[in-house]
Image 1 (spheres, rainbow, N blue to C red):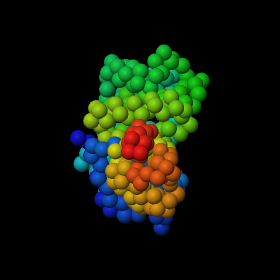
Image 2 (spheres, rainbow, N blue to C red):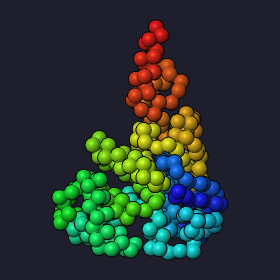
Image 3 (tube, protein in one colour):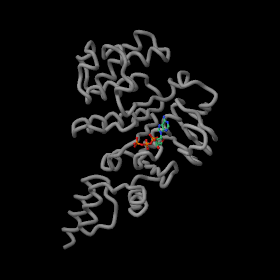
Image 4 (spheres, helix red, strand yellow):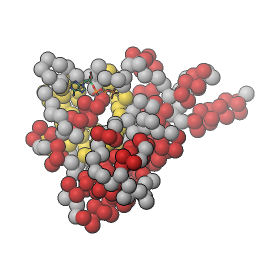
Length: 270
Ligand SMILES: Nc1ncnc2c1ncn2[C@@H]1O[C@H](COP(=O)(O)OP(=O)(O)OP(=O)(O)O)[C@@H](O)[C@H]1O
């Protein structure tokens, strides 16, 4: 099973800059959300995982491979990263070429790349648009192309940077289904998110970052129980939990179903 090990990680973009400080983390199995205010260091951390940046101090092992000892290109068959802004990722002039590019680069044959791209385009709902120029499509569709490009590479680790940004309900539901499918396939899924409701509903583990350090790390329900620490990181509890609190509940609700069940029980006891 895919694994990431982070030991004593320090990072700055230039000398004396301390963006990440003494990070120790281990990822295996659980889908994990990484949350924290703007500038906390989340994107920097996942770029380090992907091998696009190298630690100033400490080590990152991706399936036992030290990112210091391998190029990002060679690591690409282990770890896929969907960028926050699809415009930073897309560069081909038609959708199919864009989605096939990754699999071809990591050694898939033309035939395998076509099959992988087909499956990925199906998963993101873009079948039929293979020959269209990505820049003739809207931002939502470009985001889905950037997700498909990573899915098509079939890497054991998949990381999303802000996948729900600018997405409506339907887009979020599709992304949720993609993440759940990746989990069912046994892949390690990590995602940076600002949408606490989505985090609560979808992710098993949650890590809170603050000013380049890990403030909280645990089961999502336990992390969202830490209202005071969350406030310190300028984060809120999920809306269903806030509504529950307003109604006198003490526990954390991760989705509407849990809140409704609590209300039903409460009414039954009256
Ligand atoms: N290329 C760069 N050169 C110098 N500093 C950078 C660079 N990229 C990011 N930073 C700085 O590193 C810090 C962490 O940025 P990062 O993008 O990792 O945070 P983040 O938690 O992902 O924020 P956001 O939620 O806004 O994406 C910020 O202070 C940012 O200004």
